[in-house]
Image (cartoon, rainbow, N blue to C red; front, side, top):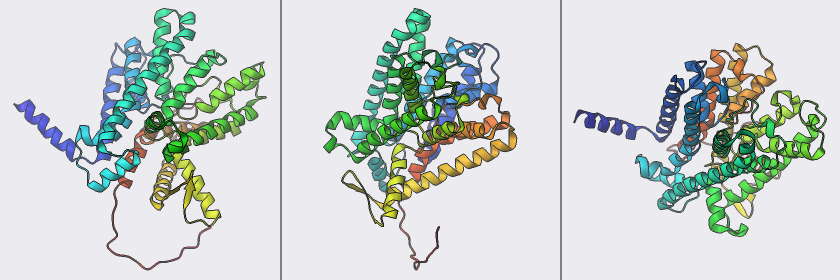
Length: 449
């Protein structure tokens, strides 16, 4: 009876929490449990301290992929299983929380918040939210299974059945969830020009990063003209960013002997360039030495990492739709237009305000984190900025600075990973609250620019 009373009391307290608080608490619980499991003697080889386990757990739950220890050698098979489970929970948990919060958790939200949440998820009714949850799990598990089967064709001949199958499953789950964890210290450099790996892994990146709302819309509509505006923006924006990254990376690194210049064939260089154009979209795997990139290439990669991929996806960043709306708002301003138009649809003032708020908060997080780390670490400044952008975009690409950070620096990176993963949705909940001004003030003028 006492246990039932305690459980009921905890449930009442949980239901009184606001959705952002409950979301953050859920992820922190995942991180704490994961850190405890990874710190167990059965999970590691004895060289992993608690802060290392905590960092790894945070990186897995936020599907980032930054590491301070080697996943393949410092963790046992049990530890690697824990990391895989944390990646799955982190990649799908945020989305399922967003679409399942009303029905599964019973969080008491006002009518305005419910309508805004339903609108943001592009669903016509609350019953569609549950249907979308089923789509999330079906697509995720299906893609991961197919990806593991295809990767096994490349990994099993090199590693044998047991190690090859496990590597295929681990990397498929990591790729679909845009986590970037690898069992090998050089990530996928050994398969830099392997045709199958360079098709399967990027496809898992892209499908997981498009967002389940987009995938569900494509499956139901199947015609471009009837698709949602959100779907059209995501598909066109994703294709444009990948193409831009592919061409730019190839142009900047073509003659660099430490990256593309190390491959003799121009076809191999194009294959590697294509992979590196997709992986900054919060995926995190690499097939070249990221630390050897030129400064201009690192800046381009940081831009892609901060942009990220799609809403309601396994990816992070400010999201492609946010970036596209920013571009549209800029174009509309210079053309003296009052409305934002795209694919025969108009975007309202509320969407622009949300985008500006999210972008401003993201800028503050990134710049504040760079400042804090630069005051405690003496490494090359570009590498520190790169690590922060990678953490915020939950990417996992590194130029080698993260393992060298002191305790303060690692704590800052953990906080940035957490904010980069949980922050956009919590901000969305706050922005979903409509308030009507009780007092209206006379208009004023501010001189800008």
